[in-house]
Picture 1 (cartoon, one colour):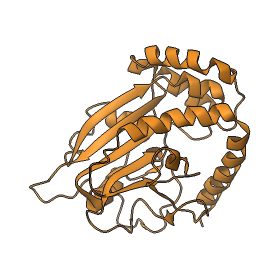
Picture 2 (cartoon, one colour):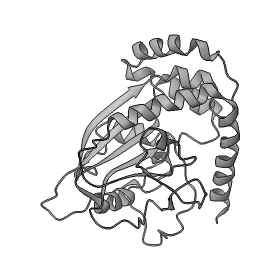
Picture 3 (cartoon, helix red, strand yellow):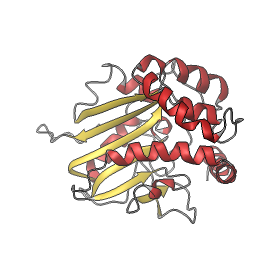
Picture 4 (cartoon, helix red, strand yellow):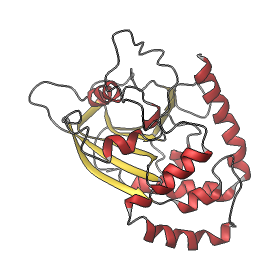
Length: 257
């Protein structure tokens, strides 16, 4: 396993330890999970799959979801690589990416693979950092992964790219750059951007995440939630975003990216 990916897996195991000792963090993440679950249409055929599941917490909200990661951790269902999925064409109804989109160095190449495995009504549900004022400040100042706002987004992988060994990449600002403006409208022509929702996520930020200090008691969570409900009306203040992509039938024969 490559060094960057090894470090990422070490962090997942460390996060599990922090998860167990921080009930506030578990409740905040449960709120995020419920937001994702609300976008899943259980009447739609096809598998529900999460890519980059980490600790596999989505099963609390979607018990039938197939949890995956590039690491063979025992609490996950299977190993999967976003660039080379093992699912058959059209087998999947929903793909969920929680804090995964910003790790896709070549989003167009990944979307082409998503398009292949999704059925004709398939959806991609993305939950990722947002680059509002809160997101830029907190993730830019206190998170070890770069924002990458000044880096060019390379939509397609080069010919030399190995789908089976993609390597480690992180640019936390990529979801905002791609879905928060019309700059990538042409690249997304095989998809309908059905929803872009923004969250201030103060309750999450104040929890300290997995490694930071908790800044308020769990009893204050309802108050923080009410404040978040108001502040989330203003995308400029956001630190989190949720994006829903719906697969479009492409009469010109392209496949997703």
